[in-house]
Image (cartoon, rainbow, N blue to C red):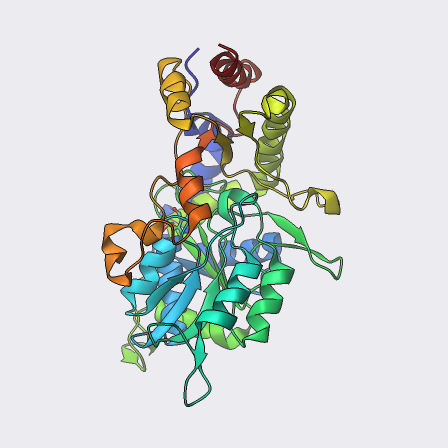
Length: 395
Ligand SMILES: Cc1ncc(COP(=O)(O)O)c(C=O)c1O
């Protein structure tokens, strides 16, 4: 049976009318740039996520870039993130002229390891004459970006403690984590994007909440930063044609806002559908623990309902590349996120990293693969996925 990795046409059947009527309303208003549709979606997004302020952006990448510009990041600065993430997390650091600094991931969760972050900051950085924390290359460390990769939140208590001990703000890359929850030590359950000083989301069409093109959101805690982000996304304009600073055109399109507004009420249900599929995979593949490591669910024990939103269902597999070939032959959709960790990308060769620098990221890149997990996956399709994997290891 052919099982696609993702089939968005099934989602479209469900949202066709809601999307069409909201998009039609934008056409009737002829207000395509910012305006009510964008403001309405920003408000709905804050209501859903619990974020204090949300500023609609043209993509997740542009949201990240706008945050850096709002913070005044540039040459002489450095930002710490993980080498095991989508390219743009680190690409944006480079684009503002700052230094991308990597710390390795945790072997089980595949997320930024708080203890490795602490060791890096304590042991490999030094204080400059003005007291600022300097990377080994001599750049001022300005922020830490944990990435809630694949839909589970990073250990925000532990990361927050390390970051605040070193006086560093946190910028959450929540691109893959809309609706994902985490219970901090205080017991308060909160969603991705609400823990850091800033955060950003992607609405790339394949995300759990996907636009009909590129779109993203920057979020922040305080109103002043939100105001700066609004200026940065609109050429740094404070009043019509008056520019106190240089920004860009990072505006969320009104039509994309309308599409997202139509889909937002379904995100919780879709996230639950993905978790149901994950439960099925766990029940079916649990017996293959000699060969396959299923995704960890680090916050499930805390009784958090949305402890994982399974943007991707990523397993670690023995003989991964042979399994990929087997799945391809069986027409079972699959993908590798991500085959080359960022410290080994050609464009970052100037950072001087080598194989072995971040062994867990390198191992994850070699050993993991993603399986179909979207909420509209049918039971017999999910069963075909697990049957193909069982057949491979039991052959
Ligand atoms: C972890 C992560 N960061 C950043 C981005 C960038 O988002 P966008 O594709 O909307 O620019 C993505 C999405 O692809 C992502 O998955």
